[in-house]
Image (cartoon, rainbow over all chains, first blue to last red; front, side):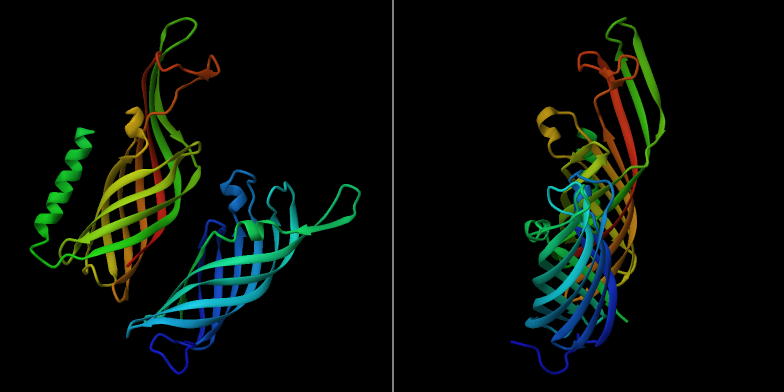
Length: 166
Length: 203
């Protein structure tokens, strides 16, 4: 059921918070356009190559997503929704089985669960599939582009956003 | 091992006796965060492989490496201000050692379990894999934090703690530039002191 009408957990406006994931850590800003739709802006340090020991320096990613919420349960204090969304992003990251960092523009699709509380707190656990191109220069100075494999292989890693609506 | 069991039993009994017959509620949750190893105290005693004399090394060492930790837990409310949780997880004790710990932790909430407010915690445990080789790694974790009661029995906790981990690593012989064999190792004790900052979600 797509949400319609006002809800006790719907604050409207913006919320800011933190992003936690095995993929990395970062900052998130969300804008609730309506009780059923919100936009999310995420800036985070891509730390997964550090976890696996492939790198000692994190990459960086910025993405935007437009999300819809489908209510699963609602109490006076909390609303839990299934979310589905899409967006785009870009990063300067290390791809799977690559040593060098490269620029990666990408399209993304995401799904997960979102809990919204009357106290203004939002928790979102989501999985994100990223389809992108890894653009880099070879030793001759020519530009090469290959599929950004990490965006697919690491899609199973969840990300948790904890944000607060002021 | 006996001492640790005694500590866990005393903590459990204390919490249980303080529960005062209140309704007990079970919660499940996840805690995660980052730890920063501040210092370690080591005491190694071993026989030198070539000459055969005894080497005794001890002292404090500045470390400065950081690790992540994650733990799933099950907690039981023991009255209005206390809860007791059993935690199993995964974290890095030092730069080269990752472990699966099992911990018992008690939390004391100054304003009550289901209210926003400060809490204090004390935990003790050991590392799961060490049951096999009987080289126990002990853990102690005193700490504090702030609980946000979100409603509908959901809680978000911000935690800050000092994790003391007693480990028995292989000893590196600086003169010989090799690890000391188990036969020549007489003592290999090290305490790691780490500052941990994390989040815990429970439902």
